[in-house]
Length: 139
Image (cartoon, rainbow, N blue to C red; front, side, top):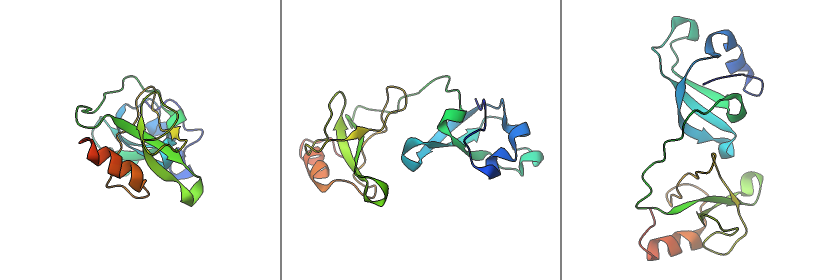
């Protein structure tokens, strides 16, 4: 549920009176997990320009439940190293401080869940990809 719009973009805040209190589903995390793309549960409204998806700062949301995606094929979450444009995505085994390659990482967490490591995304660690694929869990 959207509980406030203090940190979201000005374009989103302009629709605060219609967005506050609405429920939706997080479709995707953006900008390193700071923002979420929310798809509203109700029908598109003409007051909202017909838009159903909104870019909202994660702290402006009250997350009622987290549905975990299938994890049977990919046991690795995402850990980040570097900063700014030099950020690198690593395969992160839960409970460790380093990625598969041994680099120190900052885990990307939503509650206690981490998005799955995908070798097809940009800025992935080639060593992590190689290790994940060699143990049969890479995606």
